[in-house]
Image 1 (cartoon, rainbow, N blue to C red):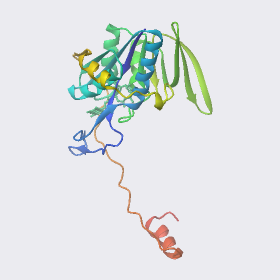
Image 2: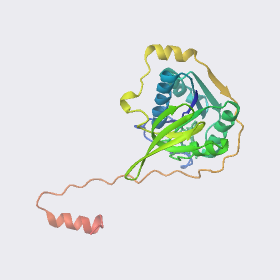
Image 3: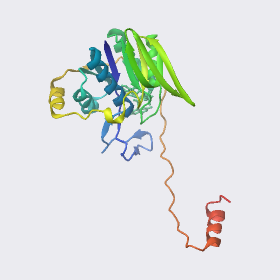
Image 4: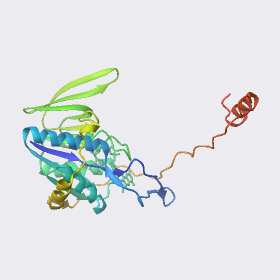
Length: 248
Ligand SMILES: Cc1cc2nc3c(=O)[nH]c(=O)nc-3n(C[C@H](O)[C@H](O)[C@H](O)COP(=O)(O)OP(=O)(O)OC[C@H]3O[C@@H](n4cnc5c(N)ncnc54)[C@H](O)[C@@H]3O)c2cc1C
């Protein structure tokens, strides 16, 4: 089975996010990039499927050369090869179109994306890939098993769980539950050494136009200073709530 895992390179969750050029550009200086956590669950599941039933796992990204360390990490975790479509991702549609073009020329049985990227949170790329390829898409999967040419999927829904049966090929959006956090793999020295020699193919983009343009980014308002009120000074507490916080 041919499995393709889409990898979004995102800022480490502890990063301090800043914007430059008057809020129009994300400032990546000093940011450590990691595999989008939802993609890491998907990649680990792909490795388990391959180990149990054979097959081949390709990781693919749309990004410039700066994302290569993240792709080498995916190779060190166990992917067989990596593909980088050489384009700065600017919106969900152009990102999905680039990946779909590759997949139309290099078909896969199972395409795994994350439920959403944890930076831009579009939750759109997987569905768009599926639409362009005219295959099913199931998002927010927390369970996946393959039986022949059928995927048995599960998703959390309001107040319960949905189990689905879908014919391959398909695109899924994965999340925790595909595997548990304790199953995630930390690359060992052998994996890191092997990753250096595994193929990382760089291909030219088709440069489809973006459909959306981010005009400006804004950070949430800074948290105001915490004021402590002396025990027993209820009058001052009420005054602050009325006059400053204006909540009563
Ligand atoms: C340095 C940098 C600069 C950026 N600048 C802009 C900008 O100016 N304006 C803007 O709108 N966006 C920008 N982006 C974000 C970029 O547009 C996103 O990668 C793309 O829009 C998809 O984001 P999303 O939130 O819709 O992804 P989602 O749909 O939330 O992602 C779902 C899944 O799709 C897959 N996926 C998402 N992105 C990629 C990718 N690049 N390669 C492979 N798989 C992917 C992953 O599996 C991911 O888990 C930037 C990203 C980076 C890294």
